[in-house]
Amino acid sequence: MKVIAKTGNDELATVYIAQSESGKLLEFVESVPPPFTLYEKWVLIISTLYGCPIKCRFCDAGSYYSGKPTKDELLFQIDYLIKNRFGGESVPSKKFKIQFSRMGEPSFNPAVLEALQEIPSRYNAPGFYPSLSTIAPNGTDEFFEELLQIKNKYYKNKFQFQFSIHSTDLAQRNWLIPVKTWNFDKMANFGEKFHKDHQQKVTLNFALADNTIVEPGILLNYFNPDNFLIKTTPVNPTFNAQKNNLDSSISKSSKHNVIIDSLKNAGYEVIVSIGDLTENEIGSNCGQHVMNFLGNKLKIENSYTFPIQKYSI
Image 1 (cartoon, rainbow, N blue to C red):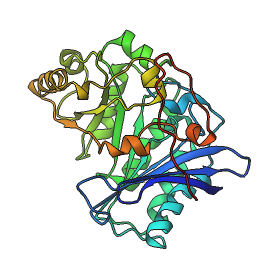
Image 2 (image 1 turned 60 degrees about the vertical axis):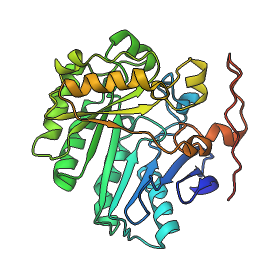
Image 3 (image 1 turned 180 degrees about the vertical axis):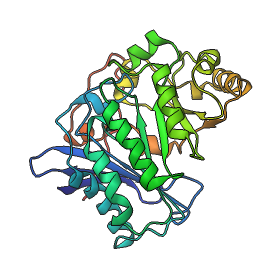
């Protein structure tokens, strides 16, 4: 595997595109989230699949799917970024997070589990903690049971686990995420086990669009605020979000504030995660930079055009 292109800003976020020996492409990201410095917090976001078969309505990673990276191809993304920044296997950042959430649903690739087991002995990184975000597809029970064992053995209180919920309305969620997933009861049961003896609460993520349905009462039926917190993020300006008329409610502060207040009143800790808007220009959170690199132009009804980035190597 080799890196063939990059774009972005070293002081904020940089997107890299790598090509496998068989010609498959994936993208991965490094980020220094404001207001932190590199030595305070450094975040890597790696791809767990070549594209994604799910085709969520707001994500461009589903534009194609061509298989699963091996453990070595997963670790290549991490090796490259660490060596590029620090020259070896040591990471001096006080907080060093690796998110398994760029391209692909991680539970579809068992190599993610292999990589998680190797990372602690592979790098000298005292501040390291992993982050895994999932829609919890049906048929992935074995993956998550092994993940729980790995967390308990290697990471204890240093593992950030997130369910991507996006809506409390079943019909709307099924439209946003067009595959069969665990129901809320099953998510809650697993989340309770994951949180047991674990200081960090399990996250329920909502990428809020203008018409997103979020009912705190429904969440309270399943997710105990003592064990679960809520994170809201914008719907980023991807091709598919624009195509499906999914405008971010975070840009409509009054509606967003009503949702936040209702969740807080229900007893939930709420994190509002809004990145630097420059990241939208970089494309560090757009979901699929490979398509831009290839020069494919997606035709959508409102003629929205995502800015083509200038790549270098």
